[in-house]
Image (tube, rainbow, N blue to C red; front, side, top):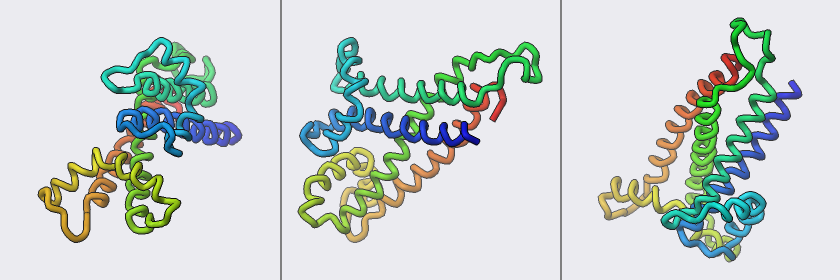
Length: 206
């Protein structure tokens, strides 16, 4: 029971830092000003890991490779913590030849899956926040963050909007609803993949 509580807390923290790393790279790719409050928040959460990595990992074609790799390292660390908390000691497995060392392939794939899953969940929140801002974002306090949210959502909302409205949007915009539905389908598939990879890493133990 205590292990489950500890794991839920640590996974939430890992997910937050991982998304902050990914968001840092995304905002840099969008050329959002570092002085923006959202950029500043990402910098504060990730500088401790990204800055040392930048000394050995330069940007690649405008992509912040250090921030992307930092996100993967956080997910990899989370996978290691899960194995340490829930793996079964040697000798208690049905198969006497089973090893307490996690499957390297499952371990790496689980880290990749978590990185993508955390980012998908962030995109869901981004879609919701963007819609809410379009409804209630007229206040001066929201004026600073609304353009950033719109710019962040546009790379994947824009093509869907053009597909639905044939480049001539009018009336209600149903693109957020469609994007939200697609993200939910991807998250459902991701959950199944995460469970399978977790079982593989832990040697068949849930």
